[in-house]
Length: 126
Image: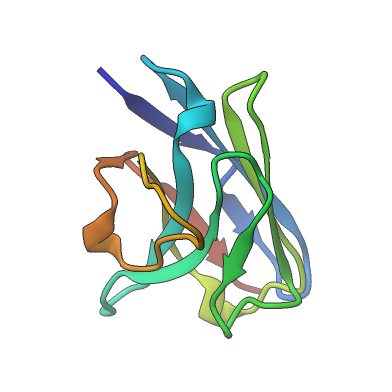
């Protein structure tokens, strides 16, 4: 059974950085495309970033492009979301997701992902 566990969330001030991690267990991480989504207070869940199973392709939402970097270490079954220049708009619960997906590109719709973590809270506030 595939399990995803996020970590690294917390309270930071505007302009600061944070790194989230997501560990996949119960299967081989290298067969899964991985994505991050977030849900802010009173908002719907939205796509943040995704990475192909071999790390060769990434995709970011316009709201985080240039500030967030997604990478993966399949030997450690872990994906990392580096977040910089954080603002209050980045405050949300961040969820890691995984899917076995063939073809080019990565999935940006939450309905495409099969496995989900419990989420980690990121709060950006002064």
